[in-house]
Image 1: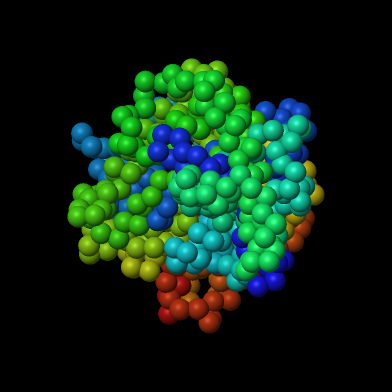
Image 2: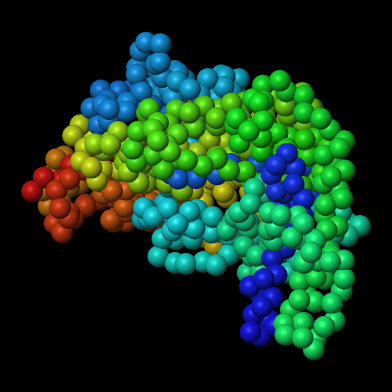
Length: 526
């Protein structure tokens, strides 16, 4: 193997060679994004915590559409959350509620520290765990494979030489940390993975062996020398992290007992490191088990019930936020949950749900613009096993909005990371734009006639005079047509939708202009 190829394959960046509270810590090195954050005031001391819900979280049983409860109950009678009674959904608004085991999240919502973003996805969903996870972490389109992660591209752009000569006096701390044993694809850079994982610290030190090897006469001697050199640099990241862990103690009494809630255990470490003065800007943690094909409501052999998982999520985030408050750092931290996809509208015969499309994201912290962004997904009266929730918001719009409004990333940085311009969303306090409470631009989706229809229909809408896009999604959540993608004069317009080549079924028309979006259901009958 050529040395250049070996380095690309095996020279990821810095991972901490030690464990904390039973979790291996992986420290990622200096980055373009994070150095930009440090240099830019007022965003220099901000922290972003990413929670990955692995397996595909069922959005409809997480955020319940009370305004369509009859259709919701009809679609999934064997797993539906109750509307009334002792185990009833926790009401947020007259239209929307949370799963009954998410009391902590309800309290955060009531305290204006939670933003729910409805129906986050992408235009052509993939229902494979592996591919969809890859899309979410690389920020790619469905039809392209990208070898770099959305955060990794930031990391490489500013500091292409990492991990050489780091840490240094300018930045002695790791700038991103993942707690766990699996390195996220999201941190993959163009030339090397920005993380090097060793779950066994003894094995790590045996490889490093405190030597600089010059054994070029032995097989792979140069490669071994390179690994050892990188290893010696990596160990230098351990000292500041250990020091930060020793400077602060968790103060919240809301954390459950150790090993009873692995997400809470991970977030507890994150809070400790932030309060201990570590300059790290991005943390990633994980909660698995969301692939609920069977026994979703009750649990079963080898299955954790969906309610238990949501309870762990709610308790973990609530304890974390309480700890940040008591430690005096809550205003510096923003958190986000995501999952690779949602689940189908209709439950299956095994008391579970199959792989789906869009699902809600949670963004939490004292700096979020509170409330619900978007509307409840439309539940058809008689859904089939293929019916899905189409996206209201592209997941890359969420990324772009957080990078811009939380980290003060420039337009150039956003384009380098996400490749395209995406709709900006009101997520962080102080961001511009409208939310679900109003639409001052006058944009509106007025409906279509006829509906139901056979081969064609006219879609009426109102433009605010700016760029406007109208897309059609089928019942699987896949974009099948783009009818408008340009600027139009202010006022009412109409466009024809030719459906002659499409089969009968439920379809959805989505209008988007700036931060505003609206969706309506259409029915093709042939």
